Length: 374
Image (tube, rainbow, N blue to C red; front, side):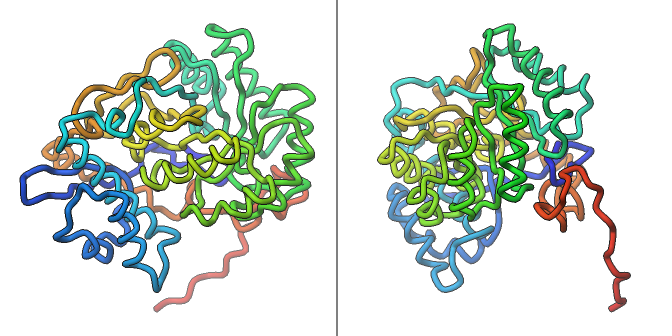
């Protein structure tokens, strides 16, 4: 699994499980990030968990001096998802219904995190997703136009069992500069009707995204790595985003607020990476401008049971109270030797020369000096 910045050969990543206990015995369960939980929790301790929106703001205020941006936002988000789980359990309803949805079906698209897959394995993944009714898919790419065209055709071929014109997306994971993006997307669009280009530039480059959106036919999708509603202001003001994306790892309240901010501008929203925080799927069912959600895997994380199904090209949410998460702590404890995604290489580490190469597929020179001993 991985992207243009690198990959993890094992395909294993760690997803923390957070459980909030209450004095009435109701537990809130969430997946996401465990960053800064000890620093954030005093904002919640002793509070009524039903006041989720106020507690969300209380958590942000609690880390005001250093700021909530970055990894700390993930800790806030995981607590937030656990609070929503408690609130829905207290009234005995699935979260999607508590949030105001009437339809439990959430449209989705297939996403293989597939930069390192062979063509054969790429075809097998998207064929398995086509069997579940998916009609759209997202390819990781951005290094070589011919390679991406060949692999987009593989994705299209697998998905045509459900539609004559599958929606095809390309994700470059912030690896280009502006003119690289214009040239690359233009070359792809000469052969493929590209639905959107995702994270073509650095996440904060609102001017660049706006210029790119005007230069290509594909929609520009970005925002999954922005940690806070305020970080979207420039993208909104300058017209730098066509598909507003929200990282599922940033939680439910962030998703809801961002969805309504986008809706006020007639923009659709799309959550990214639901495996890391499945509860956000419930929020997607409840907003008026949800477009499609990223489905990376048909299986739940190890040791986690999620009350949902993948059918008809999307996610069908269940009736279990709360977010529908059940944790098998014994299974998790017995498999703690599974591996670690915090390693020196992989999609979580940006290459030194990303966006600074004349050719996108140029090899990187290893000019790292020998380390000092300490």
